[in-house]
Image (cartoon, rainbow, N blue to C red):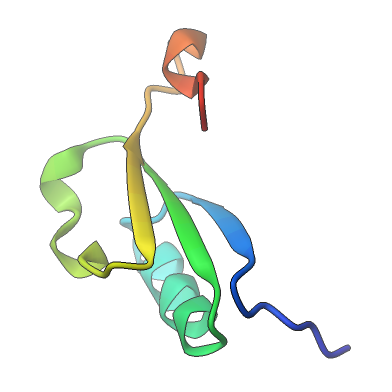
Amino acid sequence: MNLDLRKKLVLVSGASGLIGTSLIKLLLAEGAKVRALVRNSSKTKYLRDPNIEIKVIDFADPATFKNT
C-alpha cells in the first residue's frame, strides 16, 4: 500500500520512546507533519524539527487531550 503523506498531519502517541522516535523519522522522511504526544517534555531532545509539534499529555487527565 502506498500512502502520500506529504503535508499530512500524523498524530504519534508515545513519541519520545524508541518506537515513536523511529516512526517519526520515517514519517518526516515521507514529508509528513507530526503532532507528537509525550508524557514528559524533558525527553524531547530527539524531536526538535520544524515539522514536529510537541504536546505534553497525561493519560490520567483527560483535560490534557484538549486541542490534540
